[in-house]
Picture 1 (cartoon, protein in one colour):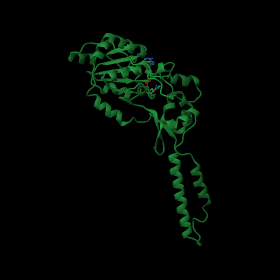
Picture 2: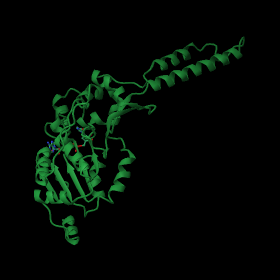
Picture 3: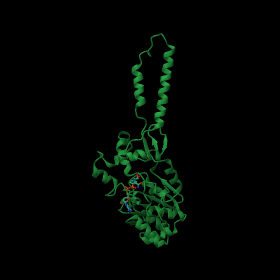
Picture 4: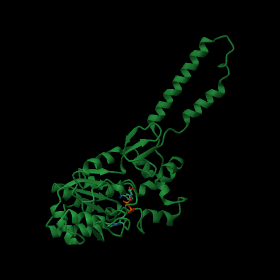
Length: 323
Ligand code: CNA
């Protein structure tokens, strides 16, 4: 109701149909596209919250002994049970997926010079594969992975074999640092021992200590986790920075394939001026938001229909990368 009042005050047309969506798209110069897992389901990647989504699958399989399927992406749970995530990660690892018409439609907006930015919650990097340059992966991706202990950032390809073989990757940098530390401790102890030669000293019977140090050395170094944002982890500051900047320029918000349940991305709507019209394209209704135009249905079909009506051509999928 408030946005309607604001629209009237600003003499903007009332909008509520496909025709209105077409008109809004025709006139927009700076579009923010906020996308979610629903734009990748047609590529064969399940979303989280649909009846056939990952949460329902995890619950039905019941093989991971999770109190709640969200635990699979919870940082505290991951720290305690990394083996659970690594026995499952293969299922969501982006390999051999082809961008959907939705991803390519975002690329089309960019090619037409009207995409301000694509804020995606997806971790599958299919927007980049479709050629979209101005995309912010709000929840990170598998492109890189970091050690939880020493924070060293590794290339994502390093952990790919572990994901595929369902084993936990450990950090070599951590191992090397620890070995260097152990060598330094041993060298120091040897030098102290040497100085006190002939005298009884606390270092004389240190076989227990030595064993402890060796055991520490054999212990597991830091676990590497892909740089996808888990529940309980903060988003990169780039998200706030981009939103702060973009809210000044945006003239149309298009939301696609998301339940808008995960903050802070779900709060984007409230950070954008009320006068900016919103088109929401989703398979199921999302009752906690009231967009100006709600287009319910399969997102691929909807963007294809909108493009036909606008006389726009969605680019074809990129050809497969050379082997
Ligand atoms: P979600 O909560 O699972 O919601 C997805 C929404 O998309 C639902 O409301 C569906 O109704 C809708 N939807 C499903 N299929 C279609 C379709 N064909 N056309 C239109 N709408 C459709 O997922 P969100 O993205 O809202 O939640 C954010 C989470 C999901 C992020 O943290 C992601 O990392 C995470 N996720 C990402 C992927 C991926 O990268 N492809 C897959 C699964 C989960």
